[in-house]
Structures are given as structure tokens and as C-alpha cells.
Length: 182
Image (cartoon, rainbow, N blue to C red):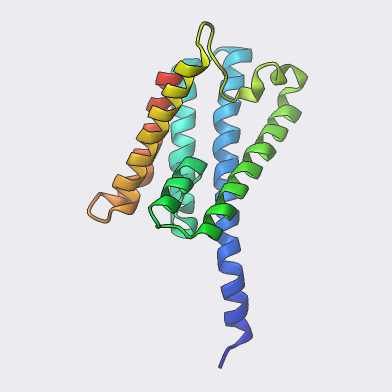
């Protein structure tokens, strides 16, 4: 016999995962882009501080969400997980939508906090550096995204790897990637 509790639980569990992806991605984008804007406007934390903020916030949010949603927090990770048949198509779509909406919400909050001047700096989001052409930037993005996806699969998906350290490894990958890309 099906109880109302089981029906509610079955309905709420996927939404709990989508909410976890939204919150985790929101915090990561807000902290990391906020660190970029703080560096631009106040200059005190430096490039290393931006990388540490991004890496620590990603690791923290992965630890907070891994038991609920798998801790993807990144459309590239979600897409790779779907392609490897580790995530269903519907779940992948909802995760990516939650991640995109989280990024937009974080950008809105950063705009509110830092004002119109922050929009000139893409609200702390990625931009092309001086003298960098789009093809080189794309190569850097592909290489760093592939590194992150590899780190995710090696430590979070493959059970032979050190899964308990997966979020820490991913935070280190994100931090190191920020140092390369800044």
C-alpha cells in the first residue's frame, strides 16, 4: 500500500537535489565573483586570494551538496555525468537549469551590492584578458573544464578513488584553474 508520506517523499527528493544544486552554485558564483569584484575595486586580496575564495567556496558547497545531489555545481560536470550515463537526462536538464538560474541570481545580488560600476567588469565573471584572442581563451577554458571533469570522475564517480576527498580535490582544481586563468 502506498502511503501519503512516501508519495510526498518521492516527489520532494528530486526537488531537494535541484535546490541543492541551485544553492551550492549560487554560493560558489556569489563568493568567487564577489572576490573578483573586491579585488578589482579594493585590490587587497590579490589574485591568489581570488583563487582561494573560488576554490574554498567550491569545495565547501560540494561537501554540503554531494550527499543530496552529487555536488555537480557546474554544467560541464553535469553534461559529462549525463554523457557517461551516470545522470538521467531529466535530472541533467534540471541541474543545468538550476545552475544557470543560480548564476543569474548571484549576478543580480552582486549587481545590487556593487552597483552599476560592477557591470563594466562583467560582475566578476570571466572576461578576455588584454591581448587574449577568443581562440586561446577557448582552449584555456576547454583544458581547465576537462581538468575539472577529470577530477570529478576520478574522485567522486570512480569508487576506487578517494571519494571522501573528492570535494577537496575539486576545490583545489578550481583554485588552481583560477590562478592559471587570471
